[in-house]
Image (cartoon, rainbow, N blue to C red; front, side):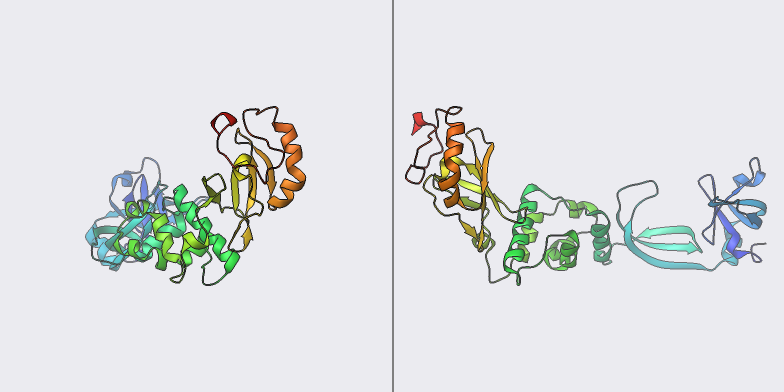
Length: 308
């Protein structure tokens, strides 16, 4: 029977059987064959809409007969594998012995190249741990590419980063053997490898900008235009909007409570046309803070009137 229908040689798996062809099958309820380890199936059908075949006639066999009926193969298998019923995959590197689709045994492999499996995991699940610092570095690099083009690489999308993974992740991919090794990678430090050799990221797209009050304020590069959010009083005397890589900062002027009161890419225009109405609205609500009539000659400050 096994020699006549080798594609129907089946091994028990879970509550049913897996045929060498890859089809799952189940014997009828109450069948004495349900306890067998191996079956040679003579007759099987598949009900409409069912993924599992129904065993109509079969005979119990042993593994020796199964091996005579179906060629056994042995091969190295290296890939990214999600276990049955699982959600998170990991590197699988093993020597697998199979009888058709039926796995007979597997042995872990140690000295094999798992980079393709790691890259497959990155494509399928991301895996890396993206801290705020890492996201900020990526945003700065993406801004440099938008503003200056080559040799700054495109990194705005995950697909772009994957295309360059062999470059910026090379040392980590060479050392990693499993998912956990990628999850602890310092992504911010790795991304800095994408900075062109002739450039300095801090010079072209600084993380912070010093404002007239002396504060060093973080720049947000996540949008199309870099954003500087800072309290209005800290910018007194700053007549021109600063530029980064030729692009003017979009300044979010904040109240003493840290709420936006105006957004501008042209500070000179704001001091001339917008400051007066903001001053009239807020000076009564925040009397301890300076609201000079002429903001261009006033001393910038982080403090209230009592501390200036």
